[in-house]
Image (cartoon, rainbow, N blue to C red; front, side):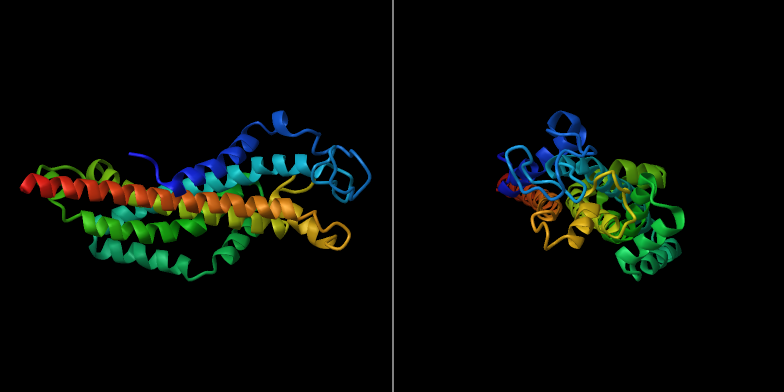
Length: 278
């Protein structure tokens, strides 16, 4: 079965940024920390995007910025996915007072504006990369928990789950062997949305000065610097802003592609079962 167009488009868009994040030194034409020309040089063959307020090559800094932003967004989405899925499936499967208690805690976190809660955590615990990842993950995990709980509620009444329970399997065994594998197609689609949210939150934190600190480049702090010189160098903020949009769009496209792929698979399975009955 061929891959859906959005999935291929998303992977195609995201792949260059993954490469930038993995091996920026081999791709960037200049040293991103060195002063290469006069400040605010216009784009040229030597400096494709011009230079910043210090005279550093903007193209090289945009490439190196992927190292921070891509790593933070993917790591935060992974942590939020793991934490949210575990809490949601456990809560949905167990039900009762445990489900009520877990969901009330989730509701408390969901009541806070996402960026405000992330700002609070970063200000309290510092702006180290690990702190940023955990802060972003903690503000996104509740929505993932709420989503996966619904999946757990649906799956807990399936025959194979009841059979496993009757045979004496533990709760964690049932979640790991039955709920998680069957919920994974739906959860992966939600994970792509988490990644898109993560890159936007990470860029917002950097824009507010709570991400990587200069001279280390990130798309967010480059946008903040560009705002101060929008009339002197209007091209300054275009590339980092475009990169944020492209990465977020690629995550959304991958999620849409996964949704279509799993929907097509479900349709094929349903058709096969109908033919078998005939």
